[in-house]
Length: 111
Image 1 (spheres, rainbow, N blue to C red):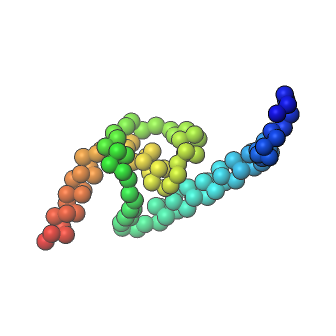
Image 2 (tube, rainbow, N blue to C red; image 1 turned 90 degrees about the vertical axis):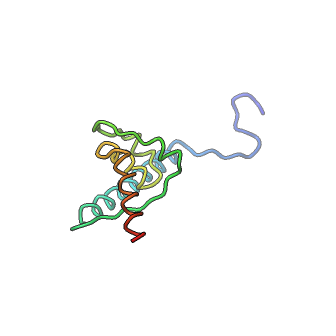
Image 3 (cartoon, rainbow, N blue to C red; image 1 turned 180 degrees about the horizontal axis):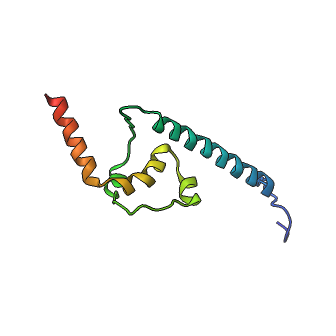
């Protein structure tokens, strides 16, 4: 390969314009998904049941936190609605709340 020239192995790399367009499209898609999640959560009348799965490592890492504003980076790093909820839930609940809830559900089903 000569100095400063294009790679000779035929590899293609996205241009800056392509990279920026993909990034903008991802932001728009995530924004729409957040709006849909918000609408779904605010339309519930009496109960709202959300289900998701998390690894034991993710569950064990749960720590209550003080309320805070979320950064764009944190929101954009999310891979699912659960990731967004995991930003917010620790500010309004404690890990013990989930254990107590899980225990009460188990008792209800065993009756």
